[in-house]
Image (tube, rainbow, N blue to C red; front, top):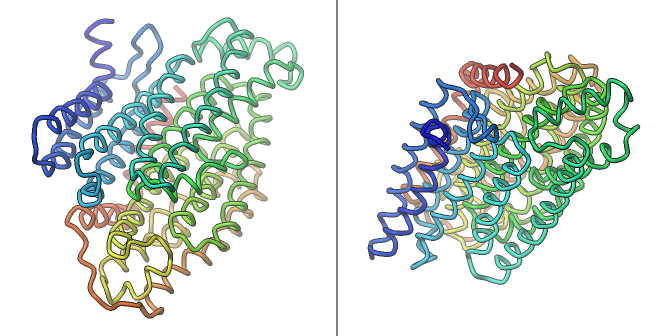
Length: 489
């Protein structure tokens, strides 16, 4: 390790140091109000380091970590999500009393693992980054110290451990087949093998390892049939953490999937197999998520099934990308645009949910009754969020879906695009149900809701991004295109 290596992962180092500083300040200061502002200000350090390393893409730590436009794009998304979640937690975290320092530190440590995952190009490093992401998240899921929260934390920990074991076994098989843990070298060995055998299915070990790795990452992005953890964990976790799980972990998961797909599975034969599998999983994920979400009365549980459907939409990009060649960038660019837009949209919604649940002590959809009278600002923000999640203009959700479904049509996956459009229409039922509840239903109480400055700021920032990039998507599209071109190159 040398100075250049340290600079390469300076964003992760600064994020981990910030988590340590928060713990130390919490230990020696009785003023807990300092923790959230300090965490937010401290995020400027990893952000500045990301900007700095973006201009100097390189590989370090003996070829295990690669920093380029692709990884930096996802680090921007993760830092944004972390900042908005901390901002939303300023009042919510007071319920944790003496443990507020641990709360903020665990968020920062989980973000550190996610950022490292976006740069990892070696199997052991990928696994370490995944565990650094999962363990703090499991603790956060159980942080309320109530039965439901404890259940969500334990369930997440156990299922995360199982998925990690499945993923690790797949990695071991890949190592046994190729004799290396470096993604680029694995890709070379697999390409040479397929040039003679022709099909992945002709080699049982290779096929089984691909299935296991897909299953392991399927858990991370909550795609069917690996989504069983999401509803219970989302319902029991602290509300801001539910929002964090729904966007940041999904972004990190898709980042490493894209990295592996382009580095290891470049061969057209393997890409064809991957396209078929992704298309089927995509259609099933969006359909199952949307249909079950319709029946939910708990809004966090409803959005848990919604995020399963969102994973299905994003996988349209994976299927479209693999269904053509690595030279077609519409699919992967659409994925990056969708993830960035989803971060703004979903965190705006969860900021509003945080404010409403703090006021009512309830996470049911009925608690939103008459919100337009209680807090017109929150009602409008929630409405715009729901419109974006459906994919209605002029929001970033619309632009992202246009990009993804267009990529599917370009690669002869028109049927998948049609399934996506139909599912978007189906999702309008439960998203607009919330809007109807806020604007038409009568509340049990008519008192005003006064959200905290943190929650209001987070929701306004997030919804501003949702609308602004809906009208002017070019900046995000250009960043996404640069990121994908770097990945391909």
